[in-house]
Image (cartoon, rainbow, N blue to C red):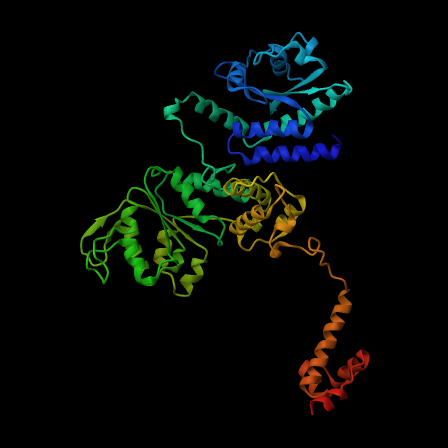
Length: 517
């Protein structure tokens, strides 16, 4: 590989580590890419199991699960243990003559080791060695010196593994989970929940999103009312869902209500329920969303759309934690945590008299602002990868990568529709793709640039302005039927300026007198 190929491969390897929620899920594709793009076969990643005091295989290309379990190495034992203990990379030009090769995991015949070079490099986290990365290359007629460049590349790849998001915490979590009996094991997120941060669907590593994660983690254990604000499409509902998931009410229901989607005539019944005969069509008693959310969380989206009448009743519920069904007199106690969301500035709504100030302060106990996508541009590529993988599976069409021109368009666009607009673009592109790649021409016209569509300006600014000026003068002369004085007043210039421009552009103003009379 040349330097550019290596750089591109390292970039793709880092993207694999970023977009997987757990360490184990990333290592398999990581080794697959090493073999496919660099020709490095039988990749093995070992990590230190502190409970055993031994190195064990976390992932190995070409080994069965039983063979992986047999791959345990004491510190200093074999090639892997030696590299871990010394912290220095090791190059073996021919495995068939290497006495330190233990073949611990598998039963490989000697003939399979002839002309096979091997490199083992340490995986470091700060000053500590936490594991090893190794791979082989069948040299054949290739020079033995190839192992030196392979070792240098593997060291850079090992740095990516060590620097991936909080590797130590991931390893610890994996170790704890591996000790849990299968009957008590917590299942990993499903195919629609693959973010690299919080597992509730939030994706992003930017400073703006890290601030959101921190606020979510702080408020989730409490029962405080939360007001989530942000533009449409930023993921306010995902923030509410994550707060519920991390709260003590996680086993209770999460009931979602879009206040803007319900007509004013039924919103009160939807929230508080109704008694039989309360109104035409109320043939039976019906519980409202507050009762359904008892013991859990109620998410009120677009809270700024509520009418003043409903705002008064909602304020009472927040104060007293009790409701009355429509058409009834009985008081029903409810144990509900309320999370509200809005894309409006409620402070402006208060000044305009459309939102109650006392309700605002009841809701705004713990505010969280979700940043628009234009304020977290570093997350765009990560989000694009996440959605590409999501819709690749959903549509049964493999998407292997997103082209560089497409990524350039993503990062230069202003995204007025935020994450929702990005998701829609990726879904459309995944459907249109025919070669497992999302190209720039798969993206909607609103994202296209002059360069991507070959529609760059073919004239100078001065020429374009002159053409516009001539068109305006002609239009003014047509309207004034060739009257220069009237046309100049219409354009806000003097008659002298009008005469000079007519002469400059060669406009036959008298023509408009004769043709329109």
